[in-house]
Image (cartoon, rainbow, N blue to C red; front, side, top):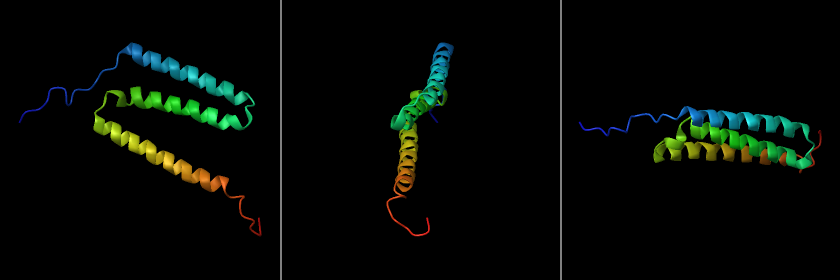
Length: 106
């Protein structure tokens, strides 16, 4: 049975890359806390979600090693995030449309 030599070999991320990602995550953490103290009005939620998305992407790409994974793993991780987005969209559409109907007993 012939196996590819690099098929099961893990990719080792250099310490410098891990340190750079860690520092980026810490900077984004402080940015998140700083933005929480600012009164951005209706832009507060989109800014917080954008920062959270960047942090999640860094964690997914580097700490979960998706950046160096096969295309099949990319497809499955993308499908998982697509499904998460669909679920959030459905939840938000329900939450935001609750006041559209005048129902007695509210």
